[in-house]
Image (cartoon, rainbow, N blue to C red; front, side, top):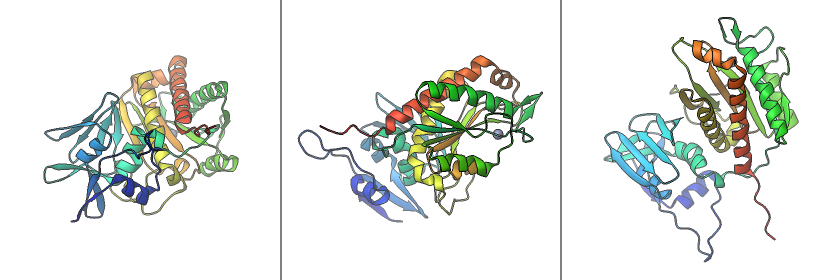
Length: 333
Ligand SMILES: [Zn+2]
């Protein structure tokens, strides 16, 4: 086991090539506290206490729970758990919170690819978001989830149609992978986005499980060298979408927050898995599970015009936030 201490500026530059905020008025670079790190097995962990200090947040431990607080956000981590909450949104970590003596530890992947992009969106790569591909899941013979006569493919298309209208009204150029009840292969869906040079890809789905289960969850592609949510097997290779891991963290978090605010649905969190449509795209992207068709109350809501509209509106708002967060900085005169 090795213990180290590095200035985060150096650490981040080496590991991500990340650029830091411009120097302040006096010309001096902003001083950020250093973050200690330690290796356990093959995973590098950061001292959670130092991460809180890095953001200037108050740090407290109570039993198995570590909390960061500031006037803007509140983060809660639990020892040995892969689930944390960030300002009320459930966030799935790649690796469980570990410990070194009395200090709690966060994996460096979770810091760099999840927590930091959400807390410090100003450091995300600049990119224009204009061309959006909407991907209503399933279609034709592939009906998706079914319950009591409700077909997932139909709900996905209805909400995608509403969302396309809203996005076009806000000035985006929108292409849908299907505009009617037709079968489109998974490969064809990513091909449409990649050939067109989409700036953002959004796949819309509904879930099915035990009738008691309900709620919203959003997926982006599993990061290289980490396990998908709910699994322990590490993704050995990189996939095209991994070029946008940091953007996807901010995108999925912002969208989940907007959807929860709009629907008050159960929060199943932001997760990672390599579904082919979000794995093979060459732009930021996510797959939204908008609710459970197998749950009676949620199924009825998902078929209602006002719920569909609320979902579409929340996603459009999140897209706007994402666009603004990534907007290229105006050139100085
Ligand atoms: Zn589906």
